[in-house]
Structures are given as C-alpha cells and as structure tokens.
Image 1 (cartoon, helix red, strand yellow):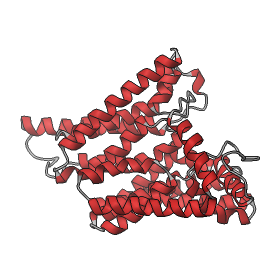
Image 2: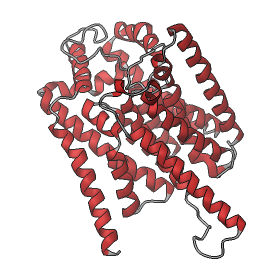
Image 3: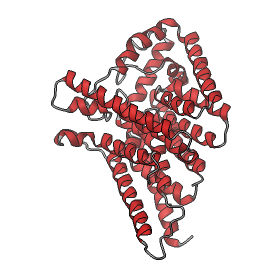
Image 4: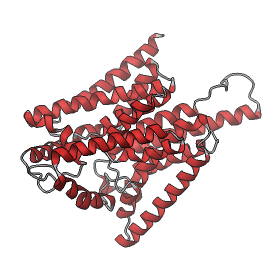
Length: 386
C-alpha cells in the first residue's frame, strides 16, 4: 500500500471519527427525550401517548419501544442520552461492515471511503443530533442483508421481526421475501414481531395498545407535513402553493404510480439472481419516497441502497486500457454517466440548508429528488440496463 493510499485512508478514518464523536458535545438530543419521557410515563402507570411531560414532541412510537428504552430511565437523562448515542454511533460502522461484507467488497479502502461519505451526510448528523433510533434500524437491516447472503433464514427472520417491532418501515421488505418465496423467513419474522407485540401488551396493557392503533397510527398514516425536513412526496406537495386537498390528491396519485411501477419491476426481475441485492435495496428507496412522511434523519437508511447501487455499476470485465472500439467507448461512457448520476443523487441527499425558506419551493425537496434519482438508477438495473 503506497504512502498516498495510506494517507487517504487514515485521513478518511480521522475525519469520520471527528464528525461522529463531536455529537457527544451537542448537549441536547430532542427525540431521545421523547423516548425517555414516554418510558418514564409508562413506568409511572400513565399512557405515554397522552402524556409526555417536558418532551420535545408527543410520543408516537410503537408500544414495544417503551420497553427498549425502559432501562435508560434509571439514570439521569444526560448520561442515558450519551449511552444511547454511543450505541447509535457504533451502529453506523458495524452496519457498513455488514453491507460491504455481504457484497464481498470489504477492504480497508472501501470501508474508509463509505464511512466517510456516510458521516459527512446530513441525515447521519441529524439522526445522531436528534437522538433518533434510525442508525440502529440501519444496523439491523444490514445484518439481515448480510445473513441473507449466508442463507441464515431463521436468524434473518429474528432480526427482521425485531426491526418491525421498533419501526414500521422495515415491514415493506416483506414484499421482497414474498417475491423470493422465502416462506420460512416471512413466517418467522411475523412470528417474532407478534411475540414482541404480545410482550408489549403483557407489560403495557390493552389501553396503551388501543390508543396507539386507534389514534396515533391513523394520524401517522395520513400525515401531511410541509416542514422542510419532511422529504417524502407528502412534503413536496404540501410545500407547493396549492390547496391542501389538491396536494393530497396529487400525492396519493403519484405515490400509487411509484408503488405500482416498482412492484411491476420487482415482480418482473424476481427470478434474476444477480438483481436480488438491487431488489432488496430498491424497496428501501421506494419506502422513503412514498412514506406518509420521511424526515431527513430517516434517509440514513439509504446507505445500504447507495452501497449496493455503486458496486453494481462497477465494471467487472471492462478494462480501462486497450483499444477504444465503439462498443468499449459506449460502455465506458455509460459507466461515467451512471457515476455522475449516482454522485448527484448522493449530494442531493447529503446536503442541508440551514435557512431553507430562502430557497425556491422546488429546491426545498432536494433530498426527495436525490432519492428519486437513486430510484431511477436502480430501476434501470432491474430492467437489465447498466
């Protein structure tokens, strides 16, 4: 390994470490206080969905999450937040490790490069600064992705079921397992989810569950937030200068079109073994586009799709040397175009504007546009076009 290569790798690790560790000095982690207050209210015999005193926002997470954060309430909030932050930070490098390992692309250089780009991206900084659980979900999905390649059906089912219990988002991945006819994984993941749900019922009681499913969940599923940080289709249409009913109608129609087209592509390519990784990550990308809301910190889940798409575009047999025939020139240009588009997608997702109101309305949805661009590149791959 040359001196220049070593310098680049060391610099990448150093910058990544500094970016991640500086979050320990932020002092406040608003969303963590919501988790904390919810579990504290639950321990006091209150309904956390009705009472979140002193919290940043109302508690809207699945009941099982109350049990996960219960151990944290026995120590002061600042210390509890630092412990949870440590878990979140470690979830990132370990998640990246499993992604690269699954693809057979793990090396010091690829790892350092991926970690640096992930740490630099605003969604990563945002999820850590807010004290969110998204990097833990990323880690669980990365483990699932890795175990899939090892054909560990039972273990995949367990980790997938655990992810369901913490966040509803991974449930979309069920479609992938159904298409691939991985029945054991489907049944086991649902079974594990049910077990975790039953445990939460036994500890929290029926009233809390009733409040969540009758009041909280319907409110989430029909959310129409126009905040800049909502980068789903719902946020894009909510920010447009049109009537709310018109915007919701357009959002629903556009979401249906994305979903139907995506399901057709996934079904059409289901038997192509070389596209299984793209299919898996394609569902993650689609979910962030059509979810009722996707805050910018949710987009850390795109780390896996970006990794998969990047390495799918890497030319395996095309030499960069030799005679430039028309075919070779065209193939090289295609790779260059793909990397330009993928880089543009990353930049649109990774950047953040501290004063978004100063931007034109369309520019305020840059993360959504970057995600749609990634969706387009993955759709090309599913169609067999590089």
